[in-house]
Amino acid sequence: MIGSYNGIACGNIDTGYGYDYVHATAKLYNAYGPGDLRRDWTVAPFRFVTTGQTVVRTAWTADQVYERSNGKWRREYETLLPRDQSYTGTNWPLLRYADVLLMFAEADNQINNGPSDLAYKAINMVRRRGYGKDVATPDATVDAAPALSKQDFQELIIGERLRELAFEGIRKHDLVRWGIYPSTMQASVREYQSNMPAALRDPAIAQAQRITERSVLFPIPNSELAVNPNIQQNPGW
Figure 1 (cartoon, rainbow, N blue to C red):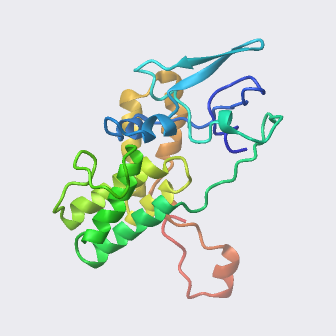
Figure 2: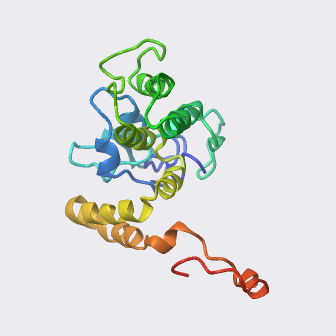
Figure 3: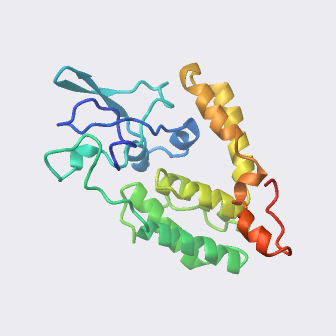
């Protein structure tokens, strides 16, 4: 269902039906710098307006950010024909090289109490590709700022993983790993309350408000608690 359920809004099967169940946030859209090609690939700048059998690619206006769809698996590039309404031939990406590079940069920064040259090389390869540059050629216009502290480099990693891996099912696990999942989601509530259009606001707020400290861990099953009295249930459960 990749590109269908989480694809660009479209009511025509020949163009590539899209249910438009996954939208962007302003935080994601605004995370990309000027010239970052990943923004309009990740957050589709258009939708398909369907009237009968006529399909018109229609651009979103500048203030229509929250309405925009996940654009990564747009069905216009689908090779499995004829197209099915709900199913595609696209496989879910389990691990990409950009993810490996960012994991390496993060681990290097933690181990060395700051980024080494290798950490900079890894993250800059990802950034250069995002801006359409040669990944092996230094470019001061897109490369990470030099001499960053451990904390500042970690903040760069947090942002770069958001930009590079958006809509790939990784962000929640990253936020849990960094210990900022509940706080990030509660900050999202405030963002939605202030900025999200009223028609979209309530469901998004309700989902984000559900995330508390107990959301970091699953509950230990009662069957396990019953056979081992030394096990303590996870907080909040």
